[in-house]
Amino acid sequence: MKLREIYQEKNSSKNLFPKISFEVFPPKGGSAYYPALYEELNLLKKYKPALVSLTWGAGGKNNNSMALVEALRHQLDLNVMAHFTCICNSRENIEKHIKEIESLGIDNILALRGDEPQDLEVCHTDFRFASELVSFIKSRTDLSVAVAGYPEGHIEAPDLETDITNLKRKLDCGGEAIFTQLFFDNDKFFSYIELLDKKGINVPVIPGVMPVISFKQVERMTSMAKVSVPPVLISGLEKYKNNPDDIKKFGIEFASSQCSNLIEYGVTGLHFYTLNKSYSTSKILDNITAVV
Image (cartoon, rainbow, N blue to C red; front, side, top):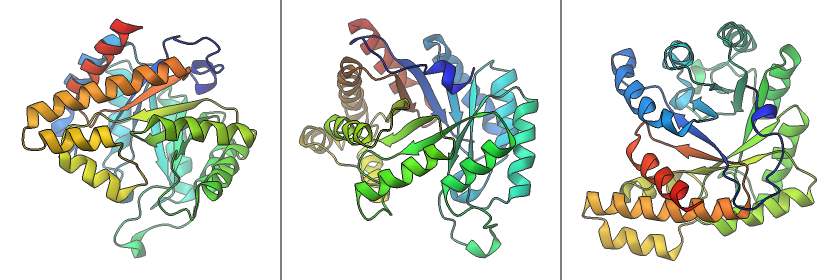
């Protein structure tokens, strides 16, 4: 099912339960570790995800994503959204992967610039920006293409206004939905939606939610991206940082409250960055479905 069918329109009714989606990544150890990922995803299937997105791999390294795309599509019977990145990719390579995606019955792609690798000399540079990748994909296929949005601005953008201009360029090239970077402050997301509305951007915007599982995880994310940490989250992290079980419980409670607030606002979907684990995401979904 294509993005345009999954997210047909913005929720007009408050408390209408959103479409659920999950993001996973290729295990670093390769195919030997696929069964562990399958087990986690099988535990999440009961929540009837509209789609599961699979990352390309860090630093432009594919890590055999296509083999995993095929397995998730045909062995687990999931609606997969494959990530395509500009970094370390040529037009020839992207065209090859488009054909592979279509042959597997995949309908959706998330087009991204991707993370800069350490050794740029070995990388193809046919695509500098995600907008160029979106345009290339749409010129060769009718696949649905999603793009990334950054509620607090991309870390490399000089300001949020510039980042939204870049986002609009991706949409003008054929992007049909926006999946946001994770955020912890819902007010930042609500303000972002208002800014997008003012720019005439009215495609579905799917908020990205990442359950907090450790103090180091939050430190890492805030060092890599523009992500504000609300005082209540800081307080909880400080209180439980030396107790892994308690900090995980606190992370579940925080994300459950965050998701409930987003549902009340009327989001079309919720996209969970699972870190290839089902436990926290399952607990959050149990909590919010019990309330709605």
